[in-house]
Image (cartoon, rainbow, N blue to C red; front, side, top):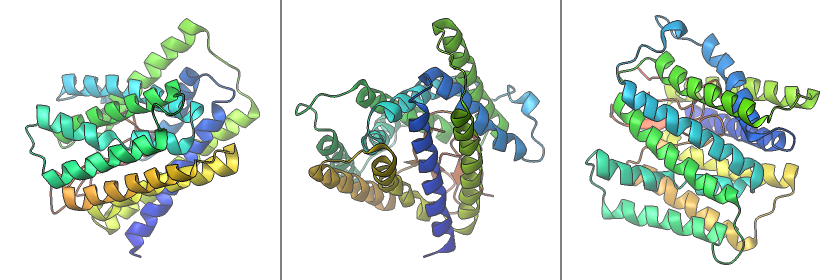
Length: 323
């Protein structure tokens, strides 16, 4: 296995660890407080890794204010939506629904970016959707609000992807991260005060939050190293390993066991998603609590194709560009 791919495997495993910790925090903390605190703690590595020539005190100086504000709105909604999904439904189901994002990305690209879509890609996207239906089984069991919020997070992730494809090369990393982070912190801070949903932190909460910062920061470094060692197109398919980690962490820590035929649906999602990346040229959204449409995607432009964008959840909301 190529060293860059191996680094990506470890990075995605650590991202999934953070998601599993978030699910545990949901047992004692309200969603607004989780969103606020995890974003705040995850911002620390980003500040420490500020590129030369950029200043966090001027992140509000942007070239595309309307699009960045759109990203901020989609970010705060998607951030809350995926947190609620993670804490209320099994991790594997949340991931499977979140991986519907490529379908919404295609729709947005067709409607607003005038991009064409091949029949092969439509077939693969249709297979991914069928896989999600097999996992979730709508009409055969009661669905939870968490299933709906997972869909919302996928839509928001698609909006963020489309926005980043337009502005990633024009805005600084500080602006891309700072605006989205500001939205999450301000909106969730207001909601915490308005609803009174503020709980004192236990030592377990502090350990969980600090772990998210440390583990996510380590994953960030691994991911950046991976993108420097191998093209983004080689890394992109590895994102689907997060479904495997979701199954493992869900079973070990939360006693979540998918039904047997749900594994068939998950396999379909993984295979169709990987083929979509390899043959369809699809921009990839890697889902994690730390960045679905929110403060933490990393944007990498490949040397061979400057418009190819790979996004990954970086704890600390770090944006990385391959030169």
